Length: 320
Image (cartoon, rainbow, N blue to C red; front, side, top):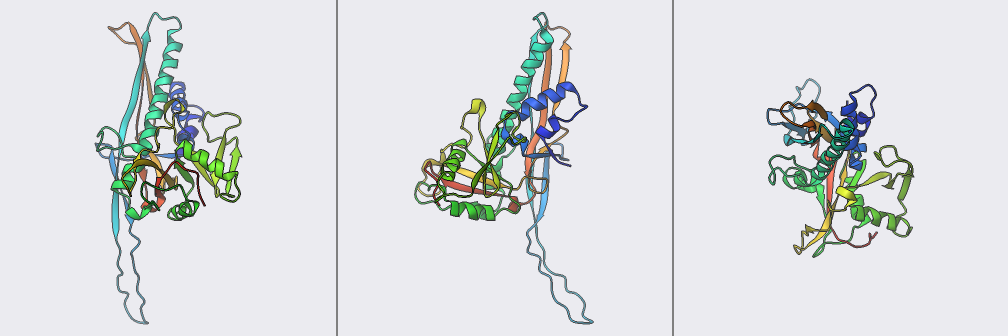
């Protein structure tokens, strides 16, 4: 069974410390209300592989009293890895309300774990830092078939085109999420106010999956698919800014949008055994009381047709 981190965090009858740090992580990003996590078996390096069909099998006809001839088939693999995310908190044992001060500090550290995962989900690269996991951008560039990356760019990129976006949506089976920058999400809202551009943009208020956003939180939808802006720390729009190199013209002024099918049979979060929190209390030989949070986590894609990238988008109003 796969559930989101937000759903896991609000389960009853679990360790209070673990629940508190899960809630802190879940509040760090909107993706934790939508991305399901599975407990994934791995090798000693927290790595695993997924085998998928190339869908090139061809069966044959036969006549009466004729034996079947074996048809063709083909398979390929995708490789993934988890990373160890974590942090520790400590306060002086003589600090007033030391236990509550430690809990508050650990919650802040756990939120940082959420921010780290959030950024790596898109931009993570083991080639850049072997201690992290590969995110969507790296997987699209290194492992997912190139036909799942779509662009209509002219020199230096082009505004997002809803015609092209519809083709990107069509490239993903069972699509149920659109990931983009906050700025691009606002552009959807802007074009949604213009019926001549996008009459298929609507809103759904009070979505409970928007972890920690509270009353009034809402999701923007395009053709019934939620648009999930990926933001950095302190609400900064710095994970998918307009700084990607354009395919034509090689100018650093474009961004990408990702369409995905979220689920155990699509794009999913992976973890070893869930979020772990430890309270060590007063450690012998130290004046501090200490606690830490660790999470062995990453992401995987069950099949290449579960994700597509729309790249070379410039900072301009959306067009039809």
